[in-house]
Length: 386
Ligand SMILES: Cc1ncc(COP(=O)(O)O)c(C=O)c1O
Image 1 (cartoon, helix red, strand yellow):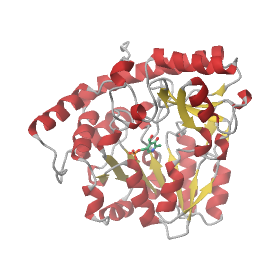
Image 2 (cartoon, protein in one colour; image 1 turned 180 degrees about the vertical axis):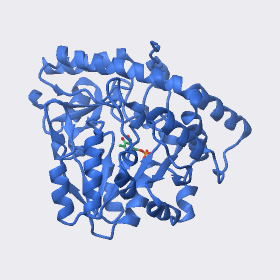
Image 3 (tube, protein in one colour; image 1 turned 45 degrees about the horizontal axis):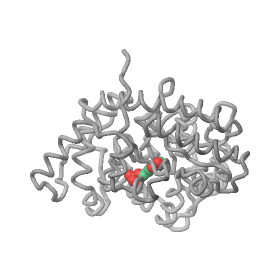
């Protein structure tokens, strides 16, 4: 059955938004940097938030906000992953969950494996938890990026005690394979290490690709792992502050239960309401329409780059609305984003922030209208040929 792609809001309307994406640069700059998307909210979310605003329902998040049941249902429907509801916990956002888990599972000064290039807050978060980042770059193959299992093995053999996994991976959009994730789990078990899997982009796998929840890969994965996720990326709810933490097994469950109550209290009520609405079956049709729109933009971006920036290197992401593009051939410097913002009036995320593999790269957010995407790449192309 064909699904009608979601239409992004008109740019004049988007410019009235007050979020980071729309308030960081002047109006002549097209913002394709931070990972916010340009669509209307899913109707169930609009409805629950509107109702809350009307009621002045802006207090604290209650003890059982319904996140447990909503997430369990979503994981089953969308990923075929059966989650034990008692293993589901919540906090303010994904990085808060990651930092609290890392704090508990590593000792100060322990090394934590991070696969670069990676979402920049991973570096700070490891440090905030008292750890030291050990970079194990993703391996680039002809068809995409893969976990460098040998590199991870060497890091764990050398004493690293945890792996902070990004699954699917930001910025490359890699939906790690079942095989690689299972092998990673075995390595973690062999070296008594923990895997914390950030799965915020999980619901966004493109046609022909599948997201594999780490904890669902094998009994071993469940024994060594935690998953942290949120509806916030898929449903554009980042400002509302709610994320889900899932314990793989009883030992991890004990760790999550041992958190100070404050960790759960950081969950925003609007975030909880919106996550519950997002994970409900009634929002599945909206998500399918979003995926249809993102699938079209992903193909459009490949065409636009081939046409306007033919020397750019780009592998379309397996999942998500972020594109990792190597524009080093254009000699816009190690960090091309500032030049593109100044000269082409397009704001992109800075490649080198993702690690040294990001030199000469930019990250393009294509969660926008096809027209905005076209205009942005045309502007970049015009600069390239000027
Ligand atoms: C991989 C990844 N993790 C976490 C986040 C941020 O999530 P939160 O705002 O819930 O901490 C992002 C945002 O883009 C992300 O890409």
